[in-house]
Image (cartoon, rainbow, N blue to C red; front, side):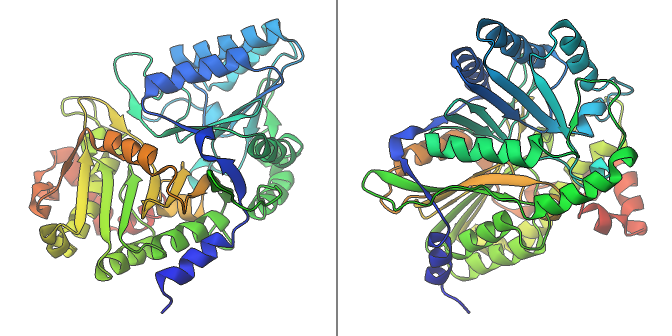
Length: 449
């Protein structure tokens, strides 16, 4: 069996950008994230490329769009492109009844402001449940704003509730150039990627051949940049992208990252459903004596949680499935919880929800990503992230502050019995979970959530 030093060397072999430590800034709230987006839109001079799962037709989404159109009016030479998931853009919110897709707003705005902003739908798979554009990043000239958040009311804390995520700003011309090149070459110039601001939008069936070739292209896609040696007051940064189980650079880096740990690992994930390889890595960390902290959303902080008394639908069962997984994990490793080596932290803050992802290792390695670290992210969705290697510990303090901020509304699970069992759940949830288990559908579902 290889030692942690072997896996650390594998990470060090990755091509890296030499980044000044003070060029990375951490934001700590959804409202601060929103204000920074608006400020960067207002100050951009050359380009604005937004890539997210969706940009919603709601108050926050319209505010972002209004800012984009105002920037274009003030500086006509500004190149503005928005890339969102092809399928997600053409439907409403899950569980909210029949709704129009966001693409209709894009088309209405394009009719009022012809040729101002280009809106693109990126089709990763034939069907949304088979995989989506989960790659993230907002580029403003030479500044990258990275978060797992999409753009709508709750992600941007437009009203009373917020969905908590991680938010990082990197000001670096080389990273920005690599990012822009990837977006244009991989998405903007591909025949499978469709304009959403022009009607009619082709169906998936109509672009079946283009999409097949696009998927193959995505599986081999990577960020291109000139690697550099890391000097004093610098950290190494590697942008990574991955799709599918085979030859997935992001997945491989995550595996090597966990195996490289010597003393401490801190993981954020909203949905506890680790792929088999990550589950094995977690078990090995505990056996090796590594201190492991998992910060997970309480089921009531899940995106799909439906409070008692509100009309229930099938998607409302997902938070309970994740809790079932977590209870089994906690019961299996209760001895490590008792010793203090394993810390399961449940995040819950009023009626808000939790969407954080990422990994911290030994105060030297940090993964900033939108990947949920689940089977869907591991094999179906197009994901990306930024791996920060900091052997001089230049960013140890700001990342420690970020972890403290994350833990502000988290409490430690002392015993697996503190988590509810199926028999404790509302009747409609019990019926759903029993039905899934009876037909073994939960085994398939675990690969899709």
